[in-house]
Image (cartoon, rainbow, N blue to C red; front, side):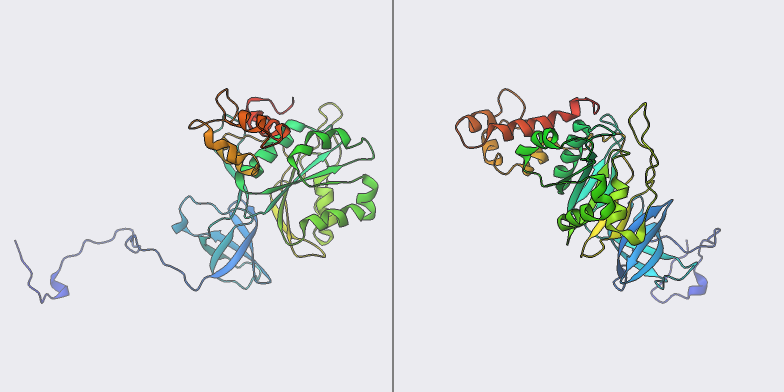
Length: 336
């Protein structure tokens, strides 16, 4: 066996040829400390549109990110051609830590969760008061996802010219959720957009809603320079509208600081990913009462300490009922 001393000649050392002709693999990944900061505006078949300063830049995810995907609202680090000119392509090399995440699954039995929007501070749940009829169970599910993901909910009720909002507002009154009621006439003359805009200023707000409720029409009124195609009609048999928004898109709020994220119309909202123990954080008046709960308490069982807590007058029983209604929404069908 040939042995080498401290002073070897590189020509004497045999090296195995690299048949693929590429560079050897390494576990050391570049830090890209000089990467520019950007925000993901939309994702289309693996290509991401990002905002870098005041420029729109097209980018692809770098290989070193592996299976980690960037979604609308993500703050990312980008390298490469950042000019934003036609046919240029940059690389996303890092996804920054998220402050909030709106997630959903296809149904309650689906183990695969989908991140819809990242870093949004508010979730606007848009529902029509008629045509199509409101679906309280779907609203409940959106609220659970908002509380679980760290978003503040906002109810936006449309088509008040077709039905009064009182009954639906009474259902959610004990949750203290801010709301805006609009009519078709108000959407057309711009007064509805002005009132909704007051709730959105300075925030990133994700808009979700059942197909046909007028969500995209409202977004068009809030961001007139970036109009999206609206729903053509509501099916008379199913009472559902056709999907016209096929991908989430972040748009700058006109006339105020803030962002509007329009998302595809919902047919269902699975909650398989939700940890019920996180939903209680949206009820700070009930949280102290959970100290006496058994371990892994679902807050909807005979030994739950919240029953005694509210009976002693520490909290409103209606709030406990609202919490349990939301927690049990996974066991109920969305059409109930």
